[in-house]
Length: 488
Image (cartoon, rainbow, N blue to C red):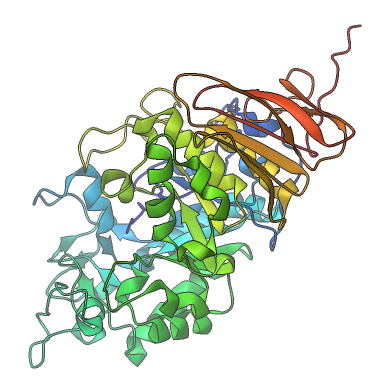
């Protein structure tokens, strides 16, 4: 559960989109990004993926390359809560970002961001606010915007002790979340000491609805990421979202074996994060000789409904915990991301983060400089260019699946083809049936520049001869045809 900083006090955000020319910086500084050569636009209702950027500042978030027509109707998620400064207790630089203080102070944040939100909306890009409506900060103190709080009361947000769950006969205390087999314990007690809002209480519900409506009023393209949705009753959360008005949202619901609260409980409210996706996919890339099992990968593996699933290989939390693959695994991690973007299951979310050695380590210095401790996973061509591949593939099912041993697989979806090589010691040369029309296409896993990209030729029978380097992929689609260079 990530809480983003307020715009006027800090330059951080949790989830966003790849960089574009920073329009509001003086002077503007365009970012050289493989995404800039994709010229189609995504429209609402045709969303392709979410970009999960950790700790990027507003210029890096709202003015990203995707918003410049990069073909990425992704959802940049911006925070609209006040943070509590580090009060000790071992939370660390990253951990302190998870302690929200009065939401009311941060409507100003979106006012400042207004031009960026409007620009995003004009390109069909939806901006999703990280809505932390399960809890408020623990203890007492002063937020970075100057609002005071304490004893389970937040005057600036007009929250009194009555707005929070509490022990019977004692509004100044509450139980702690300790038993995930008990729905009441998970949803009525304080998570990690954070003051648990009574989402089902009328006054609290009305305040939360007003808060979300205020955020929505900043642009027609605003949606919500519901942080810690698992710790709110699905019906009560649904009433808040319904009261705020229809909008796109996805809910963070971490699944666990034998737990009382499940992702399926939240499907009526909108999209839900499918944590089992990475849990089951990553091990098949982590070790060699397992790719051949992926021909049936999808709902039959026990996932939630594809139309409601948000999928990902890692996020800011799992990257520091349960994730089997992260940027630290190098090419294997990016190969798994290619498969995630190529499969038809779910609504994928790709990561972009910074290097770290300890769990709560904060970000490197600003501005963001990819390659200098900023990892920028989303900029890798095999990740960035698979977005247009995915759009070309559309809703088409996986066909022409081929496996050569268990380290090499390939398949088509509609007018798009991808081949993956998990062998770390050698390339894979093969001829495959692509199901595509004859033509010469760009291998977008390397480049989508029609004049200089590596070329793949499909013959009149739909076959193509390809060479896939070790731990790499080859991907091509009808949306990017190669052309011969013209010499004048």
